[in-house]
Image (cartoon, rainbow, N blue to C red; front, side):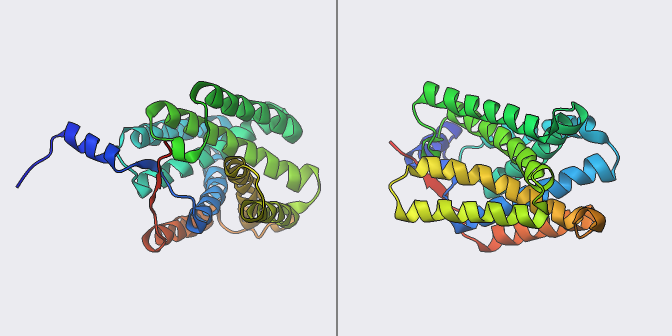
Length: 261
């Protein structure tokens, strides 16, 4: 039996032509929307139900995010559990950070959306300027991975603020907000299949918009009836969503995206 050394395994992984992020399929979007909804209910469970507040909850989730993103960058190939655990970490920290900025710092939803939009655009712009592309298929180096995860964290935080602004300030409520974001995602899907618009731009637009969709759906599940929610337990809702994600990981195909050259 021939045993490969660590360097040989690295060379073998490189030769497969695969990245450490998943191929973008219908299953990917189902998991992404579920993860963003879980981030909303899970973040609220820690900051509100446990009464830790937005600042301490954000610090906790930032620590969790740092652990998982380090693990994701360290692994040599695509691991679905590591990848989706990192996504959940970004969406929970996005929930509490957005609430901290909007409520504790007094920015308000509109202010939070404005500041976070600028941070997201700056992250994407710097990524493109440094590496020349922001396509998912190009994420196969530590530098591209760092840009990828920072951009995702900003998009998740922006999505929380945008979802809250749509439901509350714009007066659409949770159901109205869910409908608006679902329609927008439907239009992006139509453009993906029926137009010549850049697939990379459409991917990031869809990725960003799944977060406010998850935010308003999460709020619909756990907010009080008097506020337009269903008043479900945040712990129960989070547990069910986590279980559903686990089943999706078992039964939906999870393949690594192919590298672009």
